Image (cartoon, rainbow over all chains, first blue to last red; front, side):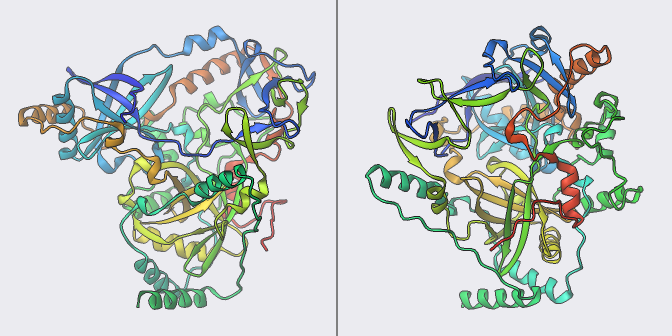
Length: 259
Length: 336
């Protein structure tokens, strides 16, 4: 069952253009709930109200304000906002091609697959060239009235485009102090290294299943059939043993498990 | 352009989790040596400060790191073998265009209310129940207790059961990021884990449940600070086959060579970070600041508009306080 393309565009590399179709690479598996009136069990409707008067403010009456500093807003007129809307375009502009590790994890946001739109030759040639050069492209485009920055990368023989967060969206950790704490002893550091080494392996996302989601789905199924669902409280545990003792025990437990 | 890039470097928003984290640590150290060693002197603008300079006066994009208010919204325990490290989670991402708010004609921020569409009766936020629609108009109601009972055992544990090379993580999986701050007496164990991961360029993989959703996370250390990146589960990331992409074709060598040339023309060894600036936000801010200077359409708000925003605090401030061990008051949740 093929997915539907959500957008068509052209990747511009100077004079060379590569026509592509964009597909979401994410499928939402979240169990979605509706908010209900507790008495009638009908879905509630939402309204925006002015807090002082309690009066409903209809969509077309809603005004926008920009917070210039906490507690201080400047109202912006629809005409002012309209002027800022980007012009629709089908171009994915490449700003630069940077080495693969240059774009840090913290910037990646949402992935999309790109598929060829007509000219498959150019598409697969670009993917192969990118892979061989070990680079990814920093791209810019406007889609559905919004401007995006993204990384043009390869996934096997295919091209993917991952939107990137803007500077303002990523909190800068380097402005934070290092947590103050006593330095671990040599023995603790050594044992921690050993423990990590035992648990070291390849990244295998397929190994993990969203257990909670499956349980919620089962729960819904059980309730639908009128079954009574027993409630159990998740257990908590506590310990007051020293860090060194705990590391020692962990290592022993791992070794036993491996034997 | 060059100036802007320099500014952002100085501000430290540059990637500090470069694969070779030693360099990043050095960079952080260098910054601290410039006089802000202990933290209190660092630029921070608290809400309500009268002498606050307008943001537009500071072109430094990192200025956006100040006066951001968020909740420390989750507490849990990172476990590593039998070692447990109680932590608070803080969002490391901010919503896009956070500054834009909905107002009434009089300029008050709007509040969201729930109503019964038939009777028009208002329903208190706390009374609303969650239902799953099994057939059109027919719902199965799940209570908070039932949802909680669906949580896997040891649900507040972020149990690290595998360590992988940071470089091996696939960015297609990344979703959102959180900082972990040590709680109670967790400092030493926290530091131990951060050190061992940072020295070996490793990320710890775990699953945990937060706010009625289970997450797969990669925990990484950066400058001694632990960060959790939530990741999508494997069944949430589509494959090219699922999309129905055409079978790959072996491209002609001449075409590949031409593409390589095109790539070379646009090659850059560093990420031009000014490209990551939100231009729309910058323009919004520019217009808003200009109107503010003219005294046009300026409104003061006393309280955050949304009832749910009560308890919102300054993010950087909260993080700083937890990192320095001074616990923020009123959040001292006891664990059983």
